[in-house]
Image (spheres, rainbow, N blue to C red):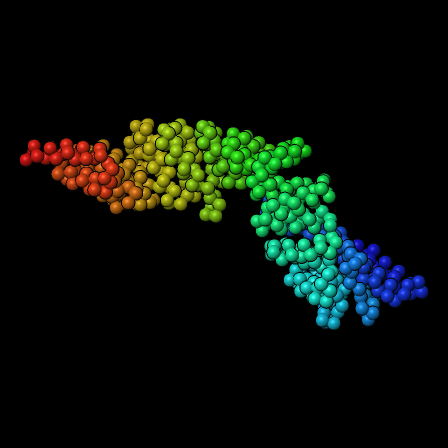
Length: 475
């Protein structure tokens, strides 16, 4: 690019007898402005998938800046530097000049060179200075819009993109970029129109199809999004991202089976978007639980347990916790055993709170298997890890009460009574303990406290009456 620019500049500078001074300056400026970035690809790392916007720096005839007559010598100095692709030397040459004395053409050129070197703040200053002299420079508006998109200042990017269109720019890139900006600003309907027009002008560009799909989903036009997605899958059946998006649409339309099949396909295809994305794995597992396939959910969790444990920033251990609780409630003991065994191998990486919660699940499994020793050990460990774990306190108290270790059981009931979420159950367990040791007056006091706190418990009232009769008979 720079070699071509050098050759063309040399030709123009040596052809005085064939060109007028004004003509030379105009042609020289066109070459200077067009060359530095004419084929440059500027990558913008945005939300997945990555978007790559092309900045086609071809100045429009009606909005073209021209060098001042006294700037031709400086342009001649730039020619060999550009030919050797010595951009640092080009910048040093500009730095020796006061931008306030430059024409709009040189300000624009300075900005574009800075933009090509990703010195965005300086490029913005130079390009803004160019617009101060000539507000209708379409190329400068496009360059500024790129800077603002990179910096995620979408309001400003949209302003300059719209201005570029008003000045005659009508290629697919500018419409696609404006659609993207509108989508980021929550203007999905406007984004739809822009992506459709970009796709109309450039039908082979998959980026515009992807953008249109996002716009349709954000506009809740799910049927249209589904139709477009199926077409895209026909040409790219192994695209993991498309299958993930298909699952998203299915979930938004309350079609869990299609969501599951799409996520499972994405999982089979592999790729970073699914294998290393614990959110997607969690979604599949939860959908399998909801659709009645707990074994598949447990397999997904157990085989990827380290990802679910993760760290403080990306942990999804709460999903494992919820599914364990559901398995206990549903008495799916074999599945619970598989999951807790997988967790035990990585138990050291858990926080004390979650170590405590999973120890309770292991204890409940042990109680189901009539292994009271293992249950007691797990429950004591749970209480040590988290003294405020009400489920652990209550379960341990109940176990000790059943083993007739009433004094220790009483200690745990009293501790559980101090927790508002467990107070009622603790009072009831404590009352049963007092009945077991025939302290009916104390049991009656505890039951009356439950009835006072929860008047809807009619069953408690019946027990209170029975105990009152028992106490009267004893007296």
